Length: 310
Image 1 (cartoon, helix red, strand yellow):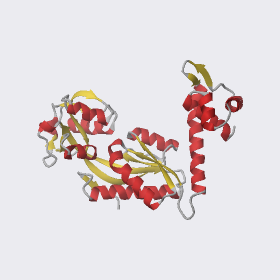
Image 2 (cartoon, helix red, strand yellow):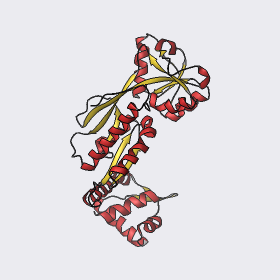
Image 3 (spheres, helix red, strand yellow):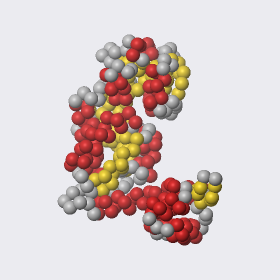
Image 4 (cartoon, helix red, strand yellow):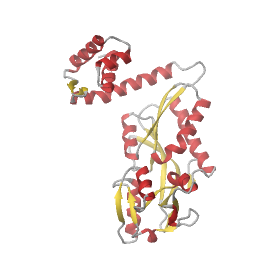
């Protein structure tokens, strides 16, 4: 097994065609077929079948694809770090961001890294906390922002901030970000919430149990954009982190108010692998992300958030 075989395999998997893969790799089609044959001989199992839609991965091929992509990505990162531009920190750094934080932090982070570390190339990945944690453990991301989670020996956590959750409705709902809403006043209203075991859902259900009552849930979705859309279309209300709706509220697209009695708060932490060596490039980008988040809180661009990190 060598790099040429892995590159040919991944490219055919992406394109579904030996001909297209040969064009992208700038080699002749028989060379791609030969690389695949050598790889299959080494693995001891067929990696593709020919289907109606072209080259389709077998079960063995699907298993190998994840490992092959990871191996090629790691080698790309090693090359970038070993051979950076003269006098600069170099490398490829993959950052995991929560959907609610991606819009606010991604542009600021890219600007900061470009200005201070032009030899670093960023890969920005957005996903829910459970997915991000899994990607951290498998090495698909270098570090990520997560909601505070249970202790995990494979990961190290650094608390960054706490943010309030807001009760969100259409503009005509009369909600005001300066006038909190009590949990008792939310009970009974139609709600659009994420499916269990989403962390936000757990927080809201815990608050409802404290009121000794049940929530009136009309729809479940783990897509934040769908939550907002259903609220706008009059299907009910939702509960989201302040950062996720602050811009919509300022533009009058949605209305929202902090939830109190009890105060619904989520803690955001920076998570990184506990057992893997951290490259200098990763440290540099982590520091830039922390600074971007700190600036957003201190400049009131992250409403209802309190900075925790020193």
